[in-house]
Amino acid sequence: MIRAERRESVAWVILDRPERRNAITRSMIDELDVAIEEALSDGECRCLVLSGAGGHFSAGRDLAGSTPATDLPGYLERDDAWTGLFKRLAGARKATVAVVEGYAVAGGFTLAMACDFVVAEHEAKFGALEMRNRFPAAINTPLLGKIAGPRLGLELAMTGSIFSAQRLYGGGLINHIAQGADALAALAKEFTTHLASLDPEAVAMTKELHRAALTMPLGNALDMGKLANTLLAASGRIAEAERRYSRK
Image (cartoon, rainbow, N blue to C red; front, side, top):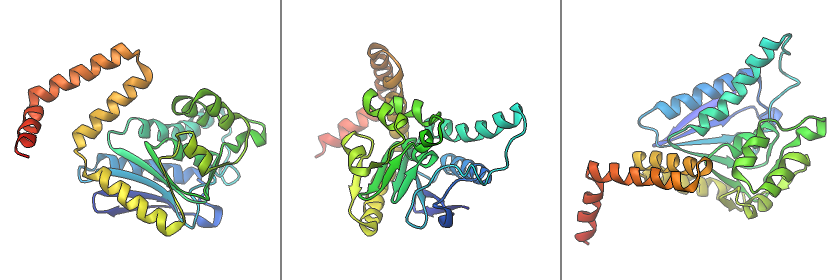
């Protein structure tokens, strides 16, 4: 159900249940967690990609195909596993990319938005469809509250509507759009290859500073950046960069 591939220094984790538009079962959540953890802990991996097989990203959690919990601990265990995926992605020190074609809806939408970057085929469709079933998109709503403007984030979370890739691109939630599956594959390769070429420590520090800026007062985040510069100077990296540019 979850397929992991290594493409040079880029780890691809692929949802592989195309007959159900890659709807995510309980066992797939566990497989996905393991695959993500293995990629993030692998020193040879520089970038993590999430994608779907068969022309779709994911239709979300397969609630119909899941064994229902019978008590509060059972429900908590089930939802701890699901929420844990997003905590793991949020804390990742490596770049993460969602490559999306077809549908990325409900939990599939959440999974795509949890990545650092999204590249999508121009006909891709996104949406928090939980509201259609009379319950909120409880995990996607706080995530959208962090990464989208307040009005767009609330519209995405509350209306239960389908949104085009172009609309999300205009709202800053998609980084790049490609025309057709072949163009998407080429774009994904180019983008992830570039991310994988970057210095891993610099990537990790940039992500930490970016997360700090989202949660701290600006003054505190700037102080964190100052300390990062001090650490880089003490390590010799800034002097090394100065020597490299002076030779050009």
